[in-house]
Length: 225
Image (cartoon, rainbow, N blue to C red; front, side):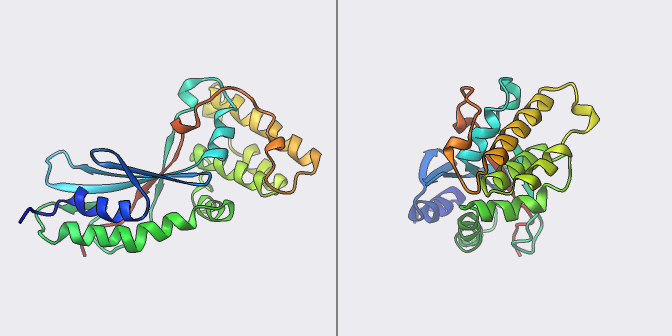
């Protein structure tokens, strides 16, 4: 009988949930405006395996992308999620455990998939981002939260976050113009009285490939109990 591998066990769960395998250890699915991606990868000594999650709200990330023409500031950036999903030794799973693939697949089914479902709305994304954005050095989380709030009609809160998103170290970087452009975008929506999602409320029109952007959600505090 062929040994069950970690990628095979995880892949079976993900493909049942609508994911498509796009690379050896990567699965992707699209649900409305959201793109989910799941990765498995090995440690340097090949003795452990980990799972990472990417979630992209394509509209929000496209808006952020359009705020600058500098390619170094339009690629995806990581945002860590310190979620205590399982008690264990971190986010690495020992490959030597014969029951490891089954346990990891069950963790993905019972914990990861419901978590992803909770992010597939502006309200759900806002709830997550509000936990990660208080640190002003988490610039991508703060920009994503500001855009999400404006899309929900909360323009004053969005501007408050943007006005506090510029540590002096970034004043001479493309991030400065990006923040200023987003402040202008939010201000236009506020002036126009936009109270909900509205494509017409997006004045920024620079070309950008939204598929190059994502909110990187690292699977934290996960391991073998």
